[in-house]
Length: 136
Image 1 (tube, rainbow, N blue to C red):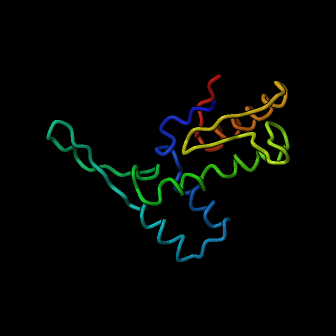
Image 2 (tube, rainbow, N blue to C red):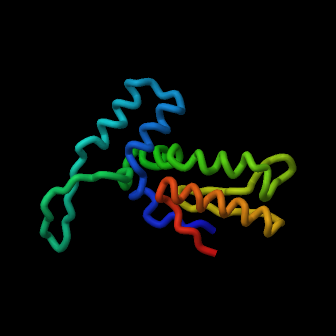
């Protein structure tokens, strides 16, 4: 199991925009999404008191309509990399090495050696993207 605790909070905007470009979104679509996060500000309300506004420099909006999809775009490179190894669990010819739901990901394999390779791939990705804390 890979724990992506607060994963929605660590999405780097510049990396997300780059990934959207490589997916083939139109410049207008990319600009629209970029505008959602550029100069975004927020505040916290606790016990009826509201904090001063602060800049949001990373993450996708909690509960935002596009947030889950944008997060999927953000981690899709990891899922493709794991799948492309050919290692891990399979159902027939279907690769099931990294079942994922939102920010939860599980590595499946009948081989400890293959599982370790997949965990190493996820660990390398987490270092590049500051995303997953690997737990065993």
